[in-house]
Image (cartoon, rainbow, N blue to C red; front, side, top):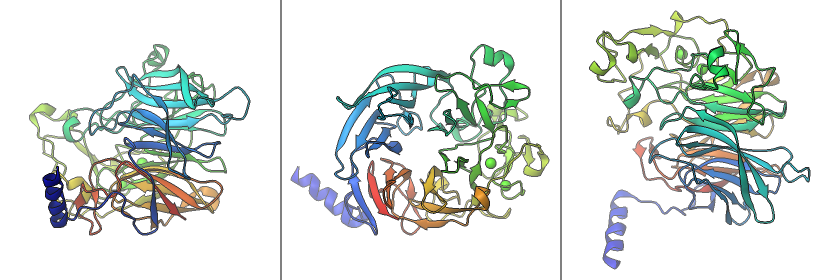
Length: 443
Ligand SMILES: [Ca+2]
Ligand SMILES: [Ca+2]
């Protein structure tokens, strides 16, 4: 054993390993050992309620002591190693622990039949979640772009983001993106939710379709807004407006003000409809069949049809309030320092925004997976405008979600257990400083 630790120690001297507990400027470690904390919510009991994507649990963490209590192991949840599936969104009923008999916690997770949203009842004596009741089952799932954030709105409805499943890229390049596909009346009647990818959904807490949901193409469904790629951030502000983040393909992460019936552009538009550095290549429609093509993120073969952003003009299109790293058309995406094909995506300008919540003084706080930082975005004009963003709480980690202590200025930040991020010099690294942790940062 001693020999092995020597090998590790020497390797660390050479390669620069960091202790997971090592303090970083302005950031302290509250808890470790979490299995990919995905959604973290400040509860009415002043405890952090945390889902663990790969740990397949709901864990309550005392922010003062870091003490962890498992409230639920989700027996039928599934996670693929390295995948975006698992135990995802969590929303606390507004009446939780208020003595009204509605101690309900809503959870979204993948299972053998797709993704489902389930209601549990919290037992405060045993500190456990019990009695699952299905709210909505049979949502499409996969290993990529699940999004999976769940929120209670001030209107008492549940809001849920469901991603484009990573279609039209990498290993799924022959799958068609369904972010603009609208459910038909026949599908809704048959409870076939297969057109829901790339949307924000709005549902009654019992899973039914609210009577006042918008219609798309004359059909009312759970769909509230369309045209998203991977909206991992979703939040209401105290003024009742709904915002989301979306992850751009190689440029153009966005913050969107989400309104009923609107279209947020993907995959026709990334960021603004400005024709910059993005065209929509339709790999599934390749002239000789998609299987005959080899996916390429930089050059579109002549046999693969594509369209410019300006080729698409939808009256419902709603541009983002702010984009991150919008680059010009001549930007060289191949030129990332220290990148090879297996790490290239970390060198692209995108930040991979992963969460959103209101911060103090009319701001939004968004986390980044690729940049290990929180972006503080000021809102203006009654919430109709945003930016420019300020970068804070910088470490070498993949930041997954935040929760703000309502009593003070402490921001809690959850981190992934593994994966690629950028080191202090901006180069790709898998050497995460605080894997599977909750960090605290004073705003
Ligand atoms: Ca968009
Ligand atoms: Ca654009």
